[in-house]
Length: 291
Image (cartoon, rainbow, N blue to C red; front, side, top):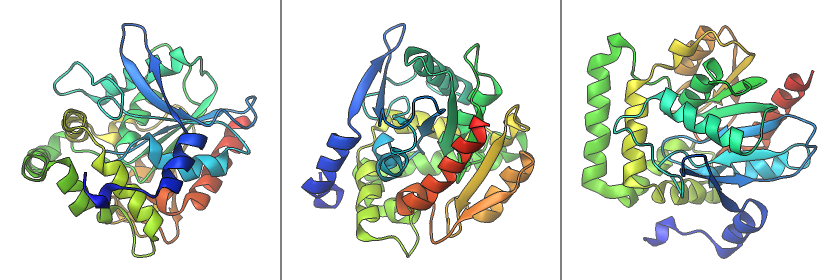
């Protein structure tokens, strides 16, 4: 592991002491890695947070700590990420990911929750909200810098180009090389050194198999296919997002019939770069879901 993918001992201590990982075993033997604040008022809806394609549960640390005095926040590692068992399908769909999420919520006995999906995580979040497969649906859906995906029929050429480019980059650079070259794209010029270190650290810990499955999720799904949503939706992104720029996120918001909210001075990894602003938005979502 290169020195670029390391974090100060103080940062790792914060992570392990205040947002430690644990594995949840599901019916059938699959495992999902989660981090859980287990704090705040347990009478309020729980925030369940899903990360993007180049990240993991640890990325929610600072946002979780800002939320912790008010409510509980749980972040998962998607299938094939962290300690989470990959999905059995070679090309899993958003529905496949959503079923794994539903099984996790059932195992944790979480019925009262607000579901938050960042970037690729928005695809799983929207799929679960559209069809929770017998599990209670979320009280509210929050899509942060949502990836629309390339699953629409008219996106066939772009879909194959994106799949080819992403997998070729993985083969040529490996996980660490991709982190070294791409982590900076997730942040704005306003990001401080700590945010940059965290984004790189998270990306450098991806697993090749999980990333390949996530590429298939991205290429095989159209987020707007899950619109309109059966529950209230919020859509937000960093005002300086260069990956899912505001104009693209505005199209997603329009599909769900809502206005786009912007987080100032934030790039794509908005909740890492501006955790206090993201936490305020999520507290507002919790308050709205509680009424």
